[in-house]
Image (cartoon, rainbow, N blue to C red; front, side, top):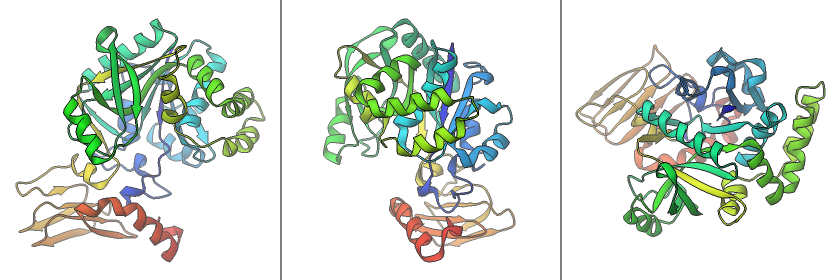
Length: 364
């Protein structure tokens, strides 16, 4: 049977001060009044029944997740007591689903993306399901055609073609230096794609890879799966999960699998609009824009003789006014206001840490 798991465990520190410990980025209703996790879940309508959709996120976020997604049943929330990177999140999900359905085929998505057009997305993911169902030894990933020589994404190096425009992945390339990213971009999308972080695989195929490449992680995940649904569930996951080796699924499984003759890694291109909303500049691309390149998110604002601004507020009574300003990020919340040159947006993660150290956890 087909299932979908949405990874929603990120902290979103680059979207501070709106993204906070009590309301991380995936739960902020800042895109047309909807949160990223709501958009990710509803994007699956018509592809996977609501009863077969699962959310993997921090245990403490469960009440907020249920409020955002009231269709989520009690067993459909997979709570992590702490973040242990993507290998353990996807392995946890696969182990729990395989316990009740050994033939489970799982698509993995993240609660960070804006994807359009949705119809094209659904068609391509359906092809990915079909590829994994027809080829049990295949791990499927989805690749995005690069629109720039970006250094913030991993890359998929494509090999021989398969059915439905898919290709064998010869190698996973981690976030490259600028010169190498430029080479990848020049080579074109028939050779290199951005790694989207979305996958489809049979649960037992993924778990077998984890068993062979990281047996200690596999043993812990199996212990959790055995206890899942029993009175010992919470005790076991609280004891075992924090001690699992912290590593990404790309490093732990996809890279070694691409060199393993007993398993195949296939990439299905996604020729559509894809935006990873992980920073304020990327959020700005989701906002209305005026003739001077000013982007305005939620809240009231007046921008006079200003250009290249991003202004957003989650305080409906607060008015932000900018006069004669250029290329600034202005984010207002009742507790904190951020003003930052747009070209220094990557420093916000560092700023968030400094705020916590100087003013306390209440501000982060």
